[in-house]
Length: 253
Ligand SMILES: [Zn+2]
Image (cartoon, rainbow, N blue to C red; front, top):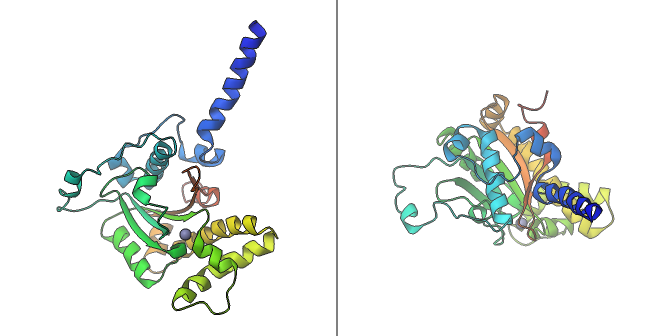
């Protein structure tokens, strides 16, 4: 009897943390000081400190993934009382895919996220200006490049089409280096797509960190942090890529 009780306790103890922690790697959890069973982070602190802003996004996504969304600041009245200004705490560079609505998956509200979305989150001059406007004028200090599972744009680039129609060639050319790198790592098409999606995000993060003359300096000075993440359409979880967290200025030494 007693034995069975301890066995049950052991199973509970080993399963419980696994379920709660699965969203981020152990390293990311440790570096960001994520607390298990925590679902909330203060909005004003997130605006002032981008590392804290990351926690706010992660906790919000955990609410969404765990079916505990609170849909903050999303009422009609919230939308109609914002004329005095905005203080978004995060800039999201995401894919235009209709299945990745940023406010919903991060469970944030009106005025929280400054979002630019294009297929495969490919960026060009207008996107750069949009991001710089947010960091310079709105003082938003956190930039997240958000890719997602089953991305059609990355999928199209995997086929390396010779003659894509119209302006689609801009997207294909931008994503191609990531798809070529992924193909070199595996022959399995599904695996290659997943690798390319991550690789594309990693390259976009590097591009923004080095983007002169504004972002590169803001990143070097530690004023702005730039990280990558991938959204899982099935579980609803956003995984922040460890490679882009461990080398942030605060953790890189
Ligand atoms: Zn996509």
